[in-house]
Length: 236
Length: 160
Image (tube, rainbow over all chains, first blue to last red; front, side, top):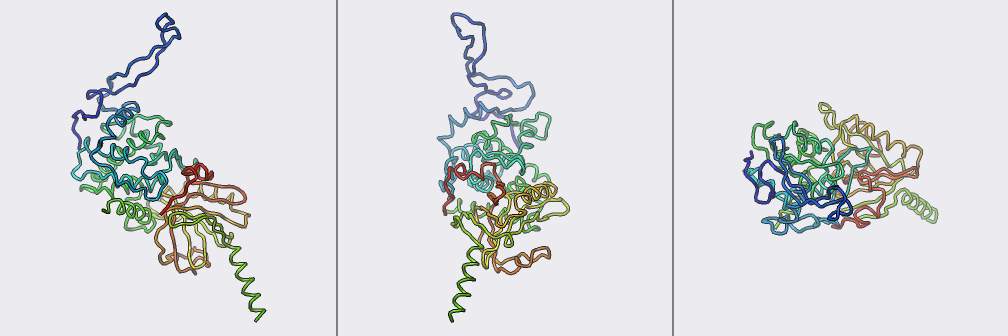
């Protein structure tokens, strides 16, 4: 599904990840009277053979490349106060993961936008009520998913994303992780169904309702809302 | 005639006191009803997978408003939440629900045996994503900022 070619947006060579400028404690000296020095951003080797994304690199990529994207979702708020606020991030991470995994049928950024609408209504910094579960942020990445995405011995073979519990709320990091997870869901469903899964099937799997579709009215109802929003976005 | 007018007046004022709509658009609803016109359940959607959908219902005239969670859950988790909601519902007279993203008005399909009798009568059903449930005993949201409206989309409401 993927080839290990360095994506042009990535800062470091294959097998390394980016570390941003950061302070480091040093001995107090004339040059560093407060006992700290600033270490410039640099690439650091990944001891495992995986490609690993960390918050620093995700932020750098978004800042540098997401203003000049090939495709973005339709600028339709869908009626939500923050409906168009994340279009650059949606377009950017969709394009990035499409480039990395190169699927026959590329993911449409409008489907991602509809998914976000159905997951969080573009409500920022949302955490499901602790009584309900632990899904976080715009695209509602669960705690379990966050752990799997960063687990070097887990189910992801490559392109891991290591984020902390706090970082996952950041819209940029949340979308990078959530869209990466959606690609993984498509990969898993394709294997299970023994055919190339559609993106709608991948989205249903993301929501945990794929096996119920067509058989259980309430699952269909959840997907119907998303489908309605998606159709509105792809309508010319 | 006068007696009939008084009866009609009393009936209409009684009926209107059963429902209070705080805010409503095609995309958003904030509605309060008497306890007897409210019902909630963990809808068992797949016994094999043991998955359920937390669902709340309200009668508003000929329409049932259904408020559902955005995702299915394990039935055991759903039953745990049911108990949490029960704590703030039991012993209260009114229940207030907020929902967003309505589906189109369609035929009431609530025909299962366990559905309370008064919920079988309304002809139509409208479906919403659940935002929060509030009673005189407390408030339980879907998202953790759902009970503080000033934090919810910065106090703005979704538009059509």
